[in-house]
Length: 110
Image 1 (cartoon, rainbow, N blue to C red):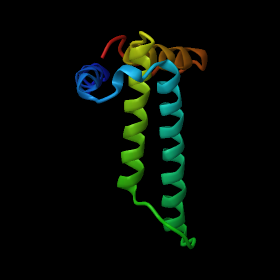
Image 2: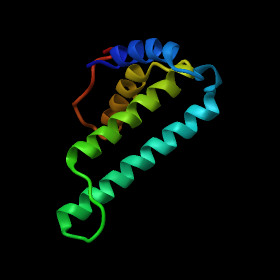
Image 3: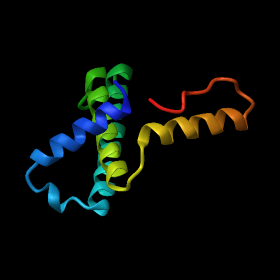
Image 4: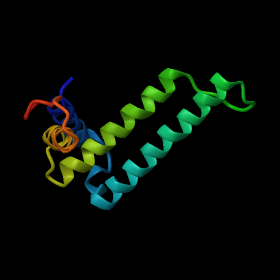
């Protein structure tokens, strides 16, 4: 999957989503924060299970699902702000590689 595929699907699905007209940048930012918090919670529960700590647990699929939700929410925010997330990720990855003298780069577009 490419970031552009996600963006296209997100735009299409949001046209179907009841109340989407009320989702402004502030709402999207809070949505992103909440979803990444859910990643942390799922990871904590996953570690609980792998370390034998008493309490509710999560499996790897639960963590993956929360990560996916977080990326979807981040793309919705990026879209609302006019940011090409794929291009932004490639640019930042490449700047970091250059900064640290590493050769690995991402292509400029997805």
